[in-house]
Structures are given as structure tokens and as C-alpha cells.
Length: 347
Figure 1 (cartoon, rainbow, N blue to C red):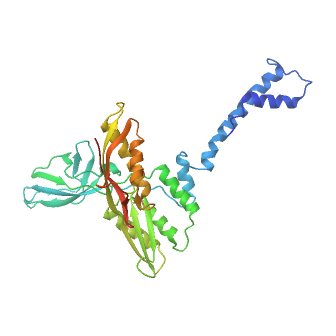
Figure 2: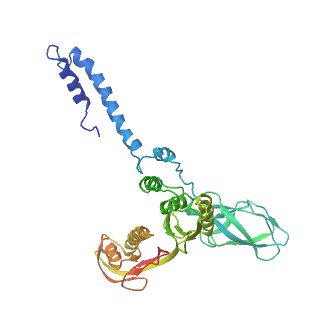
Figure 3: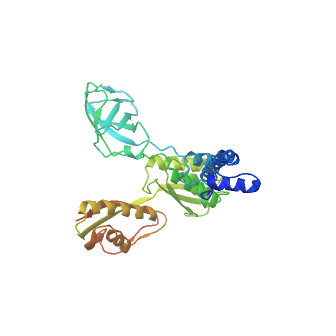
């Protein structure tokens, strides 16, 4: 903003106001007195550049985003912990205490939520991640270690973990601030329900349908930060939060959007500067971005757009075959669905 202002330009401006009656040459008394003052004034101008991201916050404003959001009662979402069902087997009568730690091969820790007394068969339990984050949404069977072994516990197996979400990013928090300013929410209008839903940990976006089942009814579809379906725990938490905020008399239904898996396979001709695995990775990344943009915004996945992403990758000359969900045409997305990237194969 002040790139044109330099110590030299400030010094020149000061000297021009002194008048020609005083000696102004370099090394003279006046020049030596003005030079440090000009330098310090220039530093002030440089510091003023830092005020721009404070006054006009964007995703590069760091902690000032939180401060600006606080003026409107908007708080950064802390993220949620993943949970998974656990099946334990062992000697009857053995008690597995609450908090018993189970680990994945790469060190992600989960704690047993309630004590379990083994019966000699397959006994159910549940575990919760030690920290928030998507990384804890592990696959079935990945809890393979324990911090401390327990005599009498012979084996255990976990189901898929769900519900783990990261702390809200600067970009996402900025987006909520902009929505607050640009979409005025009043008296339980559509924007109000969207805002309430997005204030809940684990909710990344929402679609509101007024009067969906007659007068006084509202349906809220939600997805996670990555625009994918959310767990039942997040749906329950969102419904409870909205119920505490909604106008009296409104009947609100909160549901997770259903996921529509998008499977893509392609055979390509390369120019020798890249490999099929590298193309597959880049292709999957671009498809993921496109699919997330469609959530609650578009209801047709365009085949030609998919083809463009493939041909736009460096090293790809042409494709000999390209199928999306087994076909070569556009894919329709239901009103209560969001596309979710499935298997991407490039040969």
C-alpha cells in the first residue's frame, strides 16, 4: 500500500520544505539531521501495512480472524473426536477399565469409554480418540496394539471409526464471517438455519428446505468440512443445537446428506514425462476439488469436465477410455445427495 514511499522520498519531501537558504548537500548538518528522521517515518509506513489484514480480514489474517469473529459472536469450531465400536474377547470375569488405551500401528490412541466385563464371548465396547481430527477416522481392524496389556484379554477388533473432524481452518472461519455479513439471518429465515447448523462442530455446510413437509416444517441437510456425509452423533448434536435456537412452533428435521460414490476409471496415452500412478494421484486430487464444489451447489456431475481434468494433467496426451460410474455421460445427483469420491483408476 505504501510501496512508493521510501526513506529517500521522505527525506526529499522534508528538505523541499526547508527552503533553499540552508545547505542541503549530503554530509551536511541538515542532511544528517533529517536522514534518521526519514528512516523512522518510513518504518511507520511499513508497519501500517499490517493494519490492512486486521481491518479487512481474510484467510491470511491469522489470529485477527478470531478477534473479528468474536465481535459477532462467531467462535472457531474446535473439531470433534472419532468414535468406534470395539469387540473384546477373553476370560470371563475379566474387567477392562474405562480409559484403557488401544493404538493403531502409527500411534493413534483411543480410550475405552466405559468399563467392560468380559463374559467369555464377544463383548461390545466403544472407544474414543484421544484428540480431535480426521486422522482418527480409522478403518476397521486398525487398533492392533495396547499401551498396557491386561491379563485375561485375549483379542479385540474395532469397527470403522467415525465423527473425527479437524479444528476449523482459517479459510472456513473467514467464510462463516463473510456469510454472517452478507446473508442477514433474522427471525428463523433460511440463512438463520444455515448459520445455526454451521456453528456445530463437525458441520461444514448445510442446505435448508423450508415447508418441506407442510407449514411450520423445516429440513436441514448437513455435511462435514470435506462435504461428505456426517456421523449420527454430529446429526444429533446439530439437531439439539438448532432445537435450542429455533423459533417456537417450528418442527425441524436434521439429516445427513446421503453420499453418492463417484467411481472413475481411465486408460491414457502418456508422453513419457510422467507415469500412470502420478497421473492417477493428480487426477484424484482435481476430481476431489470438483466434487466438493458440487455439494449443495450443483446436481449434475459433468462428464466433459472430468475429461478436461484428465487431459489437463501434464504428460497426458489423450485417453482411450474414460468411464464415470460405469458410463460415459453426466451423472445426476439427487436433491438430498452429495457426491463422494470413490475409487479412481488410471492405467
